[in-house]
Length: 360
Image (cartoon, rainbow, N blue to C red; front, side, top):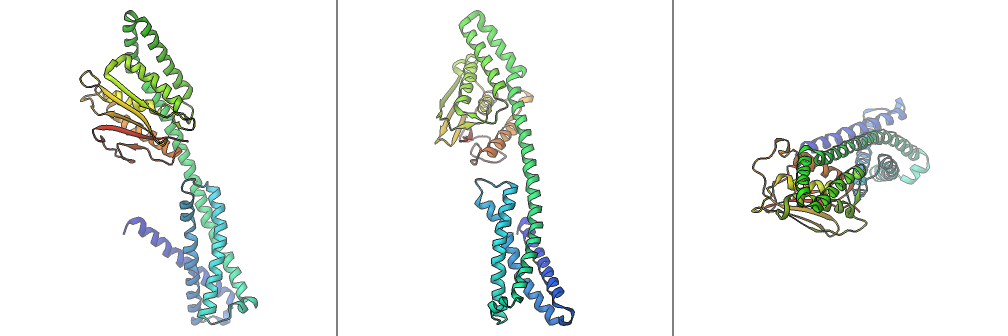
């Protein structure tokens, strides 16, 4: 038996015992000292155990049931509290009537409806409902504050991840190696091919402008992101020539969105960590799959030695960063080499494959 299951069982047992003792105490309190004896105490314990266990299990099932029902569109902490209280009233009222009917009507052999009409049964059930409401309010309010705190924490974590992704994007574009290689390529083109040098400078300018314009946005259209990616690819092809092959087959529908800079960062990752030469051209395929995913795939030919600062930290932290943000904004899973969780496999059928969920 797992540790979580043992904790859950202990929680149920502890809760039922507490409810039983509360019910027995209330029964003895309202019975009067003259009628209290061991037989009556035993009767009260059994009755309180019977109704307490059914009420506990019934009410304890409400929160998991709401989580399953609203799995695709999770409720806010406040919304869940309101739903829980309303359902609790309905469930508890039904359980109290049913249990009392079984206990007094069948076990005790009393005409239940006459018992209720005389006022005794009605008083018992009203007291039970009031007690249940008080206990439920304590439990659900505690859960509300816990969920609210978790939501605030998750939002703060997402903000930090967003800032980290923006920083990573800027760092990838502004880092000394990128600038050095770009300016070196540009200086070499100025004397040889002025027209190509002008186009290179324009595309480099477009890349920086896009980074500055889109870095604060949560989502951009797939078409907008792919225009930027194509600009970046053109820049890289001027540098690597025919040794870099990029095939794109994407559906530019208005309702398909991605996180800005995320697709470019995946292409940058492939270029940064793989050999690109005449003997070993790097082939990157970018395509959409049934309007649900964007796949970025490259043949795997990792460099045997790379710069220390690029020794795989991006793959570990950068991919997890993008993964967290996509899964926060989409119900579909972010996949790396066929896996949705760390540690990611190093390859998938000889390639490196990232599946990004498209957001509508």
